[in-house]
Image (cartoon, rainbow, N blue to C red; front, side):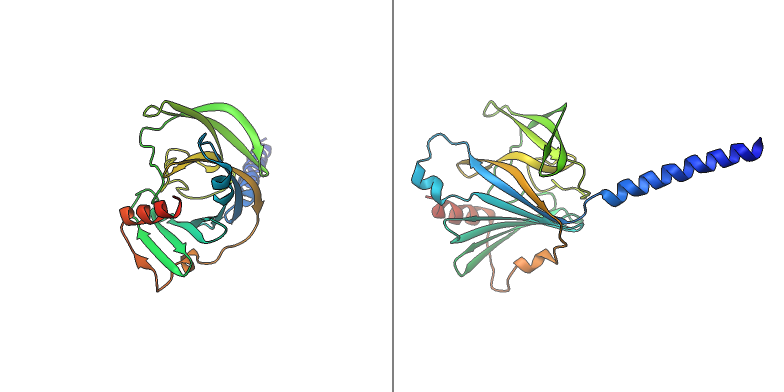
Length: 227
């Protein structure tokens, strides 16, 4: 009887361990997510909409993540690069041959986007499939503008502090459908595709010719581009 008891306990332990290992193996640690961008502003004319960015790419590995947004027919590119260990974010703006750089402090939010400091998040029990991932729904409310909208995020991607440098730092997962305000633009991002890949050192986005500027200077430069 004692032998059977020990055998049963051992079998349960091994089964539990194998399930844990299987779950761990299926967690995504690197890749690229392509997001579609739409604009919720009511006063944008058709000509302006044609020039605005329509896609964002998120490249990530277990150490870093980089967002790329290209606008005005590829004339400029706005990139944010987050280091998960230091929780610091750098913002790079390329305009033709010029490149501007803002280096953020620990847990300081990425440059040029509204921080939405008064954000209140309410979790729900709803889920839906986005780009092949099961995503959880949460409701966001901004008292300052009396704005409410839904977001979706997934915990099937294993990243450490994925939102440490964006307004959704309280969300424990990778954002798959969400909103951000860039200057006067209210943007909604929806993930469309996921690509398995292993991005190399994302700091290669930096150039020795980058001109380091303040957050205010970067905002002014971007604002002129979008006038």
